[in-house]
Length: 200
Image (tube, rainbow, N blue to C red; front, side, top):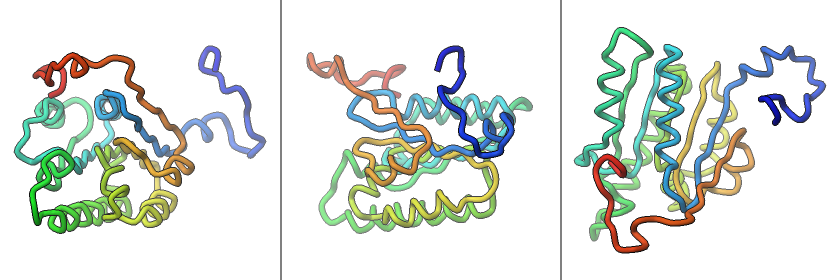
């Protein structure tokens, strides 16, 4: 895409503006770091446009202090930009598996997905981040067919960004933009744990 120009333009009868302003499904997947970080970067752009932003975290514990949550809380309360609503589901269940809790986590994930479906139907937000959403799909807690149908039939100009490893091939197929993060090097390779300001 030299100079931001598409390599081909379909003969679909749409004007350049109509084609440009279509809602997107974006997937950030792969084993590398930066999937959520990239999604939050897009959310910043959406906020700057004055769009209402909904962020739904499916894996990170409600007890964890996520740096972006604090920043978006400040931005959402400011007179500039759009509103920001932050939702957390579950207890950090991809990383902290407690015995006899899987069903509760599955229920929480399903409830979160049902809320997203209601918000999409009502066009509550213009921009959605479904953070770590690939995991409840992978674990069979949320049927991928339901996700695909809901995304396909969403009304209006709602952009949806989904993050997480091991994105379902069917989700990748229907997405408009897919980026796979690959790891080349990581501090954990030399025994260094995550640190504030970098991981949170």
